[in-house]
Image (spheres, rainbow, N blue to C red):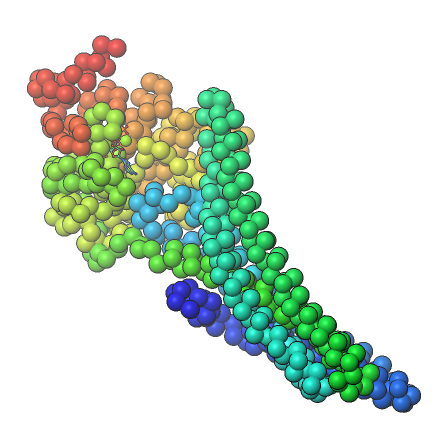
Length: 578
Ligand SMILES: Nc1ncnc2c1ncn2[C@@H]1O[C@H](COP(=O)(O)OP(=O)(O)OP(=O)(O)O)[C@@H](O)[C@H]1O
Ligand SMILES: [Mg+2]
């Protein structure tokens, strides 16, 4: 097959995940073979049972049979249980490993990758595709091993029963193989589109819940409902196509096989075949029993297709590039300065640059404010320093060394960052303040940081204090409360470089003044970048950089910029007058 993700290839790619648990696989295969053998033996027993036992009235044989059959059935049940258990255990292991691997990969993926890909589709890969892969591969294995062995066993039983009769039936095999291959090809396309469909459904449902308030206030329920209806319908149609293909395949194959069966009856009726009741029953029931492996082997192709399609998207995701982390130097703190040197940055999804040839220096200990109109590029500047995005043109230096030469971990360890869209994690307030480093700080440290961020004032009023659960993304808190938690997070960590992107924008004047005091206390001996629209909060900054249209247009202190009478002065006038 020319497809790179053919079933065989899938198995090859999966092998490293399975091989550590080879033993379970071997036990399962032995159990499956045993299971097929007992089935075939049971059928083959009908010949001596009829010819010798019943026809010849040999009752000793019948007694022997009754014991033998019980033993065989017990063996059949045991082997069935054994194979199912071992395979479930194994596929559980594989799925868990895959999920973890993908989760680990996504965590290390660049921000730009996550910006580009709908979250719903990525979640689908983690939840659905891994499950699909495991189910498909264990089902496929069961079918491949057991049913092939069963079919071979039945074949032997048939030839042993009556070779002439059996030869007639063998003609069916190539016809069945041809049909199977034809169906498999059709099936693959339907599967791929269905998998995409699940991703879109997840995305749409996720958006509906996250944007619930917007939907309500814009009266967009009807629009969203219709949108979802369309997505849902497309998915249903895709699913139906799959059912159509797989549903038609079994009857067609059974029809072919039954025709062969009819042929036998015809031959027997014409007395072309000389046959005993025992061998006729054996061949006949073998043929009927052969339906199961034939049917299953058609569906195995489909299962394998399902597995390989799931596998394709899993490996495609695992092969996307990770965040670049080739630096070797450990950054221990900031001694001299941070330098942006002719930095130009274009987001991967955009065609024009968001930052154009920006150069400035921030000395150790300085507080520098970034101001400018909305969309000017302030947040973009702030997100380049922790390397959320990597620049291709220009350089960003910390203590004269390109930030790419530092290890990502040590670089980010130096930076305290309050983003414009604060994200809080599902958990308690204390968990969120000490996020990712709970064992490094005591309860007292956490409370102290919360006090400094002026957050204790509202936390104290909550029933469980800092142990209060705040819900998904801190939904149970107000905007200003969330910001104060985020500020407490930074205060606790004590990093030498601080970035506050609109960190106090959601606070009232009084709270802002208090939090501002805490921030100012923190800024002593530290280097900070503050972004604010409310210019009154940054008047005291050592320097103010005015950004406009991705360019640095003014640079100076509050006083010097006012006297320059440029963009800053006009922005200030506008705010001051209102
Ligand atoms: N993740 C992103 N992907 C693509 N383009 C982006 C992304 N973030 C920002 N941009 C674009 O980059 C430009 C600068 O955005 P940025 O967020 O830096 O502005 P800002 O000065 O922080 O504005 P605001 O004051 O509104 O926060 C904008 O034109 C915006 O459309
Ligand atoms: Mg911004």
